Structures are given as structure tokens and as C-alpha cells.
Image (tube, rainbow, N blue to C red; front, side, top):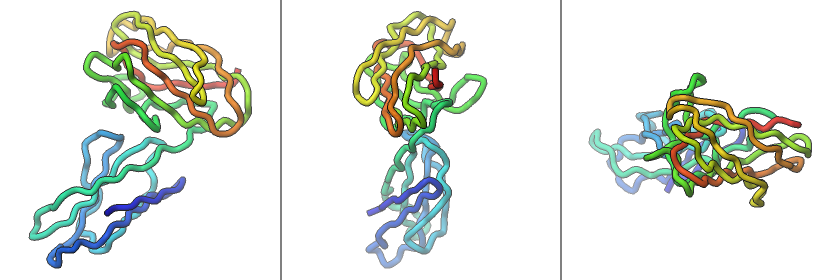
Length: 214
């Protein structure tokens, strides 16, 4: 039974001591983004807790495993919570608090990082929701960084679960040709908001979006 606690700076894992008397130590694994490969983070732990500095705004996963006779037991997995993203500024694709109908992969775009994709690109029913912290109520301009081998129907935009419009995606020339395309202006309240992109088509990838005060 693994529990997780987090704040703006730290992530702390605690877990129940193994019922096996001959457990030698524990290991902690973590991926960089949800669904990514777990990599060894800490080993030879003899206590039932682990703390590290929070690595970013994205949601990612830990696994704790007991070691007996130099062999690992079953994994116990927990996830962090995605943070609130302060705007104006860039919102990276991987910072989504929830996502469906796609997968994250290393991007071929010039800035590096990750992008959402899938078999045939993002699916036509994918959803991406972001937690946005807004300093001042008003109208914000949307831009989005995409790659697409053809024109697509794009995606709907919802703010705080209400549809506010849709964005077409024009071809960029291929899955490794990235463009920043201009979107609509959306109204956001001061404080905490959610912005959701609801895909209407496949054959596109998303690297990031920006929201700037109009």
C-alpha cells in the first residue's frame, strides 16, 4: 500500500512495511510522463519512505518494489497530480491533467520535449484537459503547435466544461513538420480554470499551446 503526498516543491512516498521478514531493501522507480517507461530512481532503501523534488507540472508515475534475495517482488504504483499552469505563456502537451485517445512520445520539434500522437496520429475522440491559473479575467488568444500530413477537422475547445468553439488544423506537410497555428480568443475567469481540447479528427500531433492576454 503506497501513499503519495505532494506540494509545489516536493513529492513524498510512504508505504507499508513488507510482511515478509527477509525483505532486504526497497527500490523506487519513476517515469518522466504518464505511461512512459519506468526507470530506477532509488535503490537499497531500508526505510518505508522516499522524498524528492517535484520535477515539473506534468502528471507522472512512481512504483515501489521490495527486494528479497536480490530479486524484485510485485510493483506498487501511484501517480502524482498535474499542477496548475500559470498563464500567459506556454502550456506543454504533457502537462494535461487527463488525456485519452493518444500517447506521449519524444517530439521531433525544435524545442524538444514531448508531443501527443498515436497510431495514425491523435485519434478522433481524444481529450486533453489542462488546469490553468489565470491572473486576470479577460480574453486570451489561443495558439497551438501542431504537425499534420493533411487538413483536419481539428478540435473543439471547452473552458470550464463549456464549448466555446472549434479549431481547424491545416496541413503542415507531414508528421515531422511543425507549425504554430492561430486559434480563437477565449474568455477566462480570474483564478482556476480548465481548458479541454476535444479532437474531431485523426492524423495530427500536438506539442504545445499558448494563451496570451488579448
